[in-house]
Image (cartoon, rainbow, N blue to C red; front, side, top):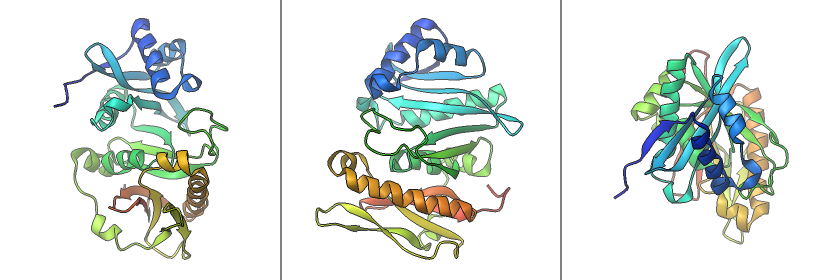
Length: 276
């Protein structure tokens, strides 16, 4: 039985030092945001929220204030959980607490970036939280040397979480989306096994002709990165090229269709503004 965790907004220098150490445990030295920056952001429109097992932080999220096109939003820059505590629902709980804090503070939208190859994060962001993606950022962070990102271009999706939107409320309440309709969409990035039994992307034609489309993504990318980096790069470039073209034509990423196969699928639809 999993022990009960406690969650708290972090504001003191002592607690922020613990969050700095937690970052090192999760990502290594290269991705650490120092205490001074965390404190400055948290006192000026940002927030750090941590999950504690006893007195020890085991997960956290950090966001700072952003401003674009005349409107403020919260930029959720990092969310990390120790490996032993993953699959506990901590990520979702942290995001929901972040949403509560953001609404109380006056924000209507939270944005963050994530790796399009990370299907697990995608399912949380899109299907469980009700976010959407309309922008693909190529090699956004430049060359990254940490153990998770090393060896691949640091492409990112920009996730937009409109906190009181219909999709966000549905996701938070656990209401099912129209998966039966999604299954009828054509899969324009399909997949096939290669001679090493690795799932590789298989590109189909026909972008722009459909209400919705599916783009395959590996269900777990980490072993592919570690053992077959060239296959991971194929997936990176396939998703990059198809998503950039799809966004130009007005498609939006709205969900992840999970399967029993070694790949899941992004769901993209042409959405009329105001319907989401």
